Amino acid sequence: MNAALAFVRRLEGFLLAVLMLAMSFIYTLNVLVRDLAPQFASRFAWIDEVCLFGLAWMVFLGLGLTLERGRHISMTALLGRFAPGLRRGAMLVIDLVGLAFSLYIAQVCWTVTVLVLNSGQVSPTLNISMVWLYGPMPAGFALLGLRYALEAFGVTDRHAIEIDPMLRL
Image (cartoon, rainbow, N blue to C red; front, side, top):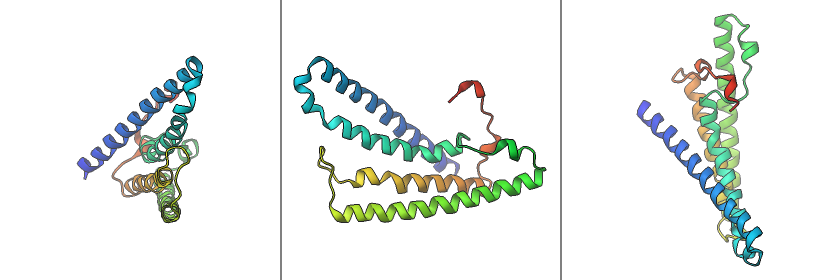
């Protein structure tokens, strides 16, 4: 199980890094073309749409990894005041509610994604299925649900991670 989780973490991190770098480079190219050779700018209109799709994938693929690393908003000031037994109970409730919510949203997003697929809707510039824009939502919330489940069953503990406030990440 640990090997599978490590693989998922590495894959998520790799995909996020590739998306961020690719979006940075192609958007820089887009800006340069618009400034230095505006007559060719219309040929690069697709870049805005690619970056929109990439941003959607980055946001939703990053949900689970962000939770696992303790970077989501949490109530640590309040939880720290609870007695250890009450704290564990409150964290379990938070994890179970987070799991239920994530799975519900993943199911709703899956339904919307299938609806978009069946509609045949395509993007205006790239002329590809809009499923590529809606698809990261159910995937991201499923990964978030996985992280909440791992927390609830004691496989991981995001609260044990020490975050240096000076990093401002």
